[in-house]
Image (cartoon, rainbow, N blue to C red; front, side, top):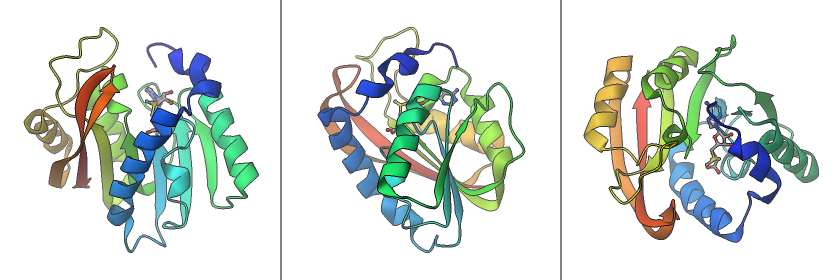
Length: 198
Ligand SMILES: C[S@@+](CC[C@H](N)C(=O)[O-])C[C@H]1O[C@@H](n2cnc3c(N)ncnc32)[C@H](O)[C@@H]1O
């Protein structure tokens, strides 16, 4: 991971604004997990678990993976406190090294924008998925008002679809589902959800 800004902000990450946005994302993701009771899910870049710890009733197991130990400490405390028995955490950065893991579903919410080499991470996630497995990405649409050296300024649907298909994904779907005020680097922005199959 390029920088460790998340290590410093972990304990203060769950603000009202982030929790509100997480609710919007959870509402959009839950229907994607219909009929997934027997499936394993990796939440890549899980952070404090704002998204996947609201999905644990829909799948068999959840592995929250993050490159920040502090974010995972917060997630772990929530798992213990809420008594969630099918979820655990893993400290890892798949752009550095991909562990021997397999999953039926990979979820990546507001993470791709932080990873400089998108092809590399998409390839690593493709490799980790079982055949027929599903990748769900939530991120910001391309936004010309966002200009920051450490993050992507969102993604154009066409470019990301092309990237996903180059990596090997099929049945790629993508749609904008939410517009919000000051949600992306303090700019008004929209979010998309994408699903694709290995
Ligand atoms: C904006 S937070 C999103 C957290 C969570 N997915 C959510 O939607 O609430 C981005 C997270 O991605 C993690 N992250 C960034 N780059 C990563 C990488 N290369 N590998 C794993 N995690 C990464 C950060 O540590 C941080 O926890």
